[in-house]
Image 1 (cartoon, rainbow, N blue to C red):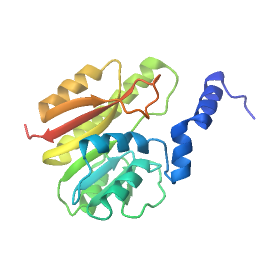
Image 2: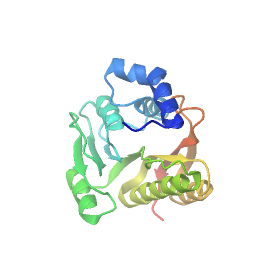
Image 3: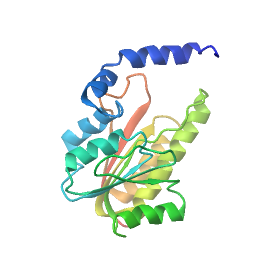
Image 4: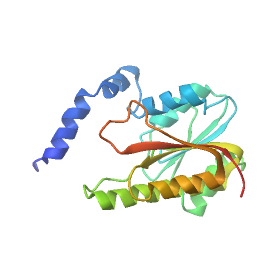
Amino acid sequence: MPKRSKSSARWLAEHASDEYVKRAQREGWRSRAVFKLEEIQQRERLLRNGIRCVDLGAAPGGWSQYAARVLGGAGRIVATDILPMDAIPGVEFVQGDFREEAVLAEVLGRLGGTKVDLVLSDMAPNMSGVDSVDQARSMMLAEMALDFATRVLVPGGDALLKLFQGEGFDQIIREARVHFGRVATKKPKASRARSSEIYLLARQFRMV
């Protein structure tokens, strides 16, 4: 068996002792990431009865699982990811790359062919350990999620997208301000303090 690197061993030890990991296991959530969305939801009320929501890069499904519990069937949720995802009651799943027109068409088809009220994205790349490479990949995913949101949101719709602070961060914030009436960043308590992870909250989508 290959020997683990010091960084991976440190991550595994940190993960095992993480209070949010333990809480997710106790409460039956698929990932600790659910508590990031929960904190933002409690303040912003993004998830509302009757909305249509798309969750990008959804696997393993923590955000979709939380959204389904909040909506309680009073809305539609479509999750999509390149990776497979176990079924979640109240969530329709489309496996594939959302950048492909056929996948996008299937996602929108699951929503009745209509535009959506909320786009969620907690996507992150597989980290290489090379900061410049990882940052570029992270921002590419964020840009794709923002572009997707501008294509599918109804006027007045919202988006919550994961970003990483670093090169390209200011540019995507400026781009979001072109399309949304309100743009802010959020650092939930469940985001690890040492992580450059931060969330872009974009509300009141406007056609430009």
